[in-house]
Length: 144
Image (tube, rainbow, N blue to C red; front, side, top):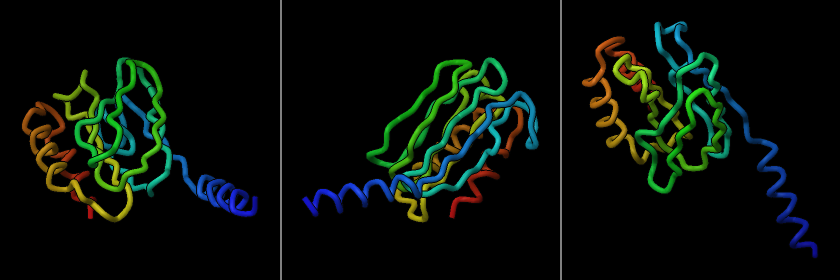
């Protein structure tokens, strides 16, 4: 009984320490047009991120994730909340506005086991961008 109580208390305290963040999907923001704001976010394992469909005609889709993490994708004009349990880099896009470089990065924790793969995805997305070139690469410079 004491062991069960201890396990329950540990689980509850871990959940209480998790933070919640929000990323807005915008037509225009601090970094230009067709943008996730913030475009780079660093969180800790277990934290929750909500992608807000602040402006219409946007959705989010994961492009690079750490091994063992869940891929994610929202519906157009719908918010999406995810809990990020795996350390590493998550690169995501708005498929409708990918050529406008509407992409972003979340770094979870300090360990980055998938940095090399994420860098390849960033390079590929930058190559396909016809507008806002260099924005995603700038975000990726924060990954350390």
